[in-house]
Image (cartoon, rainbow, N blue to C red; front, side, top):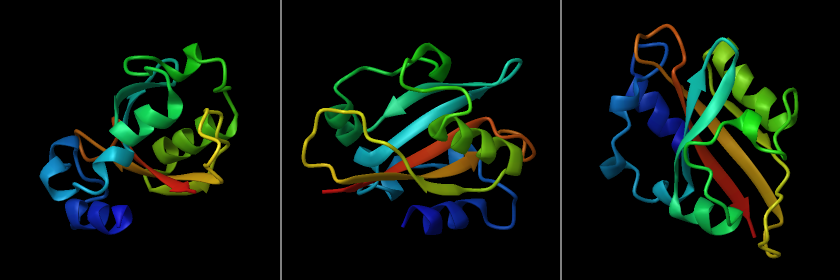
Length: 134
């Protein structure tokens, strides 16, 4: 569902922009949505928005925090590498990630990462949609 929506938003462009992502069109994805700002020099990622279901399962407020400031996210680790790959390839990435939260009923956790661009060339933000298996 997220991939199809991202494809519709971008149309013939390489990537859609952040302003193309209208919450009205993705009500079922909103609780699972994370928006991550891409920082450069040096490369880092900052959480900007976390959906309600994400807030519930992580039990921490990551808004405004950078990946480099969080103990469980390592440079070169899976989560960091997936986001970096989106920036380098300017294309979506899907993968599974390790769940480190408190919800004992979560069996699997994955995500789809979709690049967003202000200028049509560089990735400025990543729209992440969690895939939670219970």
